[in-house]
Figure 1 (cartoon, rainbow, N blue to C red):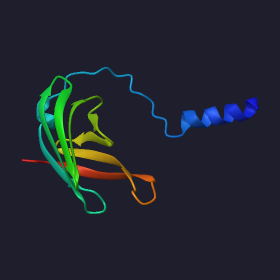
Figure 2 (figure 1 turned 180 degrees about the vertical axis):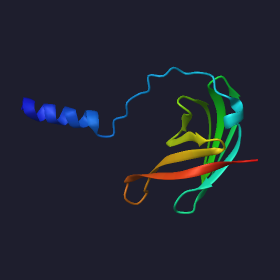
Figure 3 (figure 1 turned 90 degrees about the vertical axis):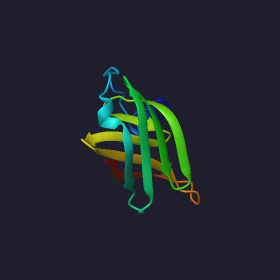
Figure 4 (figure 1 turned 60 degrees about the horizontal axis):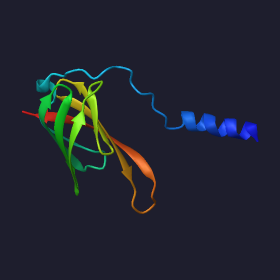
Length: 121
């Protein structure tokens, strides 16, 4: 029985586990983030991020895609932040990688949608 528990615990530690960043929160340059960001997922569904009021490592973010509309105050760390099930990571000047966890309504299964966003203007 002990062997079974050790196998199960080992799997829980490795499957889907993420290692938390040990870097501290630090102030970011607002000019790198503020503005409107747009892109399209592989299924051609468009999305928009509107980032404002970047102060220190905090920002106000609105995310829109299809029928989804989320507003949230976020914490920026390691060039990225999360809003709901969506992660925004600054990849280059005016370019961001977007990862969105989507749950299929029919099957209940989840998958990861990935895309890039460009800052407008």
